[in-house]
Length: 262
Image 1: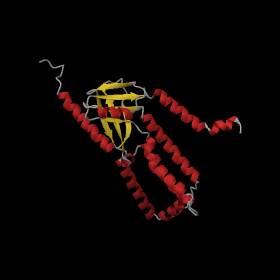
Image 2: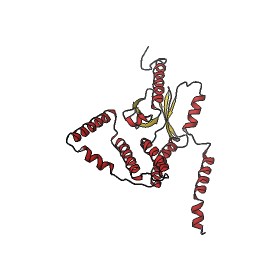
Image 3: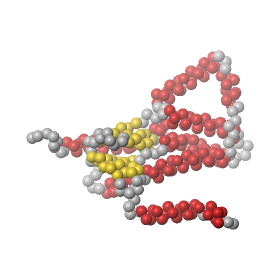
Image 4: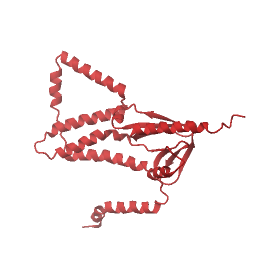
């Protein structure tokens, strides 16, 4: 066996050792969102806080990933109609794709459902529904089990990368400030209370069904770019964010306005 094959065989181990070495060298300077959340929890002066990061939009392909893993397992079952499974998988994937591409919300979903029902009623009235049903039933989108697991791994890789990236790119919100962290070290930006506003967006129906939603942060200083993050557990996090902003309002009344002369 030549050197190239040895290198290819031990490439995963070499990559793991390199990552481990980098982590050991930088562990005293790394500042992850997990460590930040732990420090805020220990701070006796802070009762409310929220540390969030943005997931990739590919997270809405979770139904496709779960279906891919299921069909991968079913591909080992003898006499399984792989063509029908492929057609079902393709339909679910296309629905995911359309929702992601066009950001379909509740209103758009209701319109599409009503339009689809109306179309089926019209086709039935003109006598074309049976023919179209037979045509669609004959679609054979045959895929191998390897194809299903490959698609699942591709989406899982994108989701995993966004989670790892979120360890070092996140936002910490407290009643007194919002801290924007970018990178693995202590570099970041801290904006005082009153200099930013927050927005909750749960208009995407599939994201909301999966427990996701968007948290937006807009800054009074227009030179600071607005932030939009797709976060998980949007219901719980939105309630905590409202509590934090409420605490900010109460705290701001405890301090005199320097612009007001007594």
